[in-house]
Length: 176
Image (cartoon, rainbow, N blue to C red; front, side, top):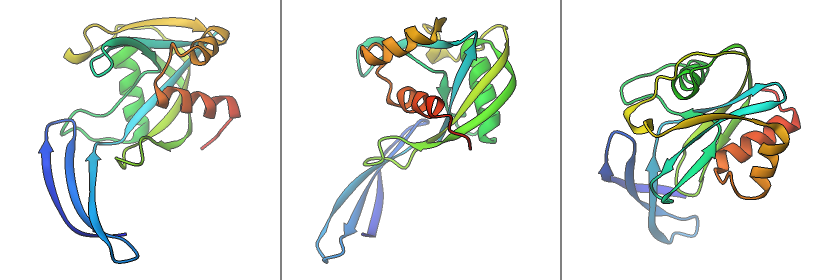
């Protein structure tokens, strides 16, 4: 597949939507809509054979949802994936980690975006005050035993695909 042209249809500080005119291998032409978003980091905060999760209202779903802490740098801020993971953990939970392990890199919704994310395991946690962004003002954090997190994943309480995929990496003992 080859890109013939590309135009930005919409843009804001969090994403850009573009429409590409494409040509397929057989010569036929079409369009492909792509959402460009920066990569993010997802953190699995492990403590006492359980995990710290965050819950917040997800506007597109109209419901509150549990997930592992995750996010991208604000517009104009850059850094390494490990710096991003550390920043997100403090921001959303208040925790700092004495030990970090990168579990891998995954893509999400690869049919519409090239966005991906690094997955980190955070241990040796020290509590502190969260530094949440304005958009996270309704967020809460809670520790759950491992068996409860697995039940939440099985029963559809946790529906975040990134959290589920990251947990699979964790259970497989994936190492970067």
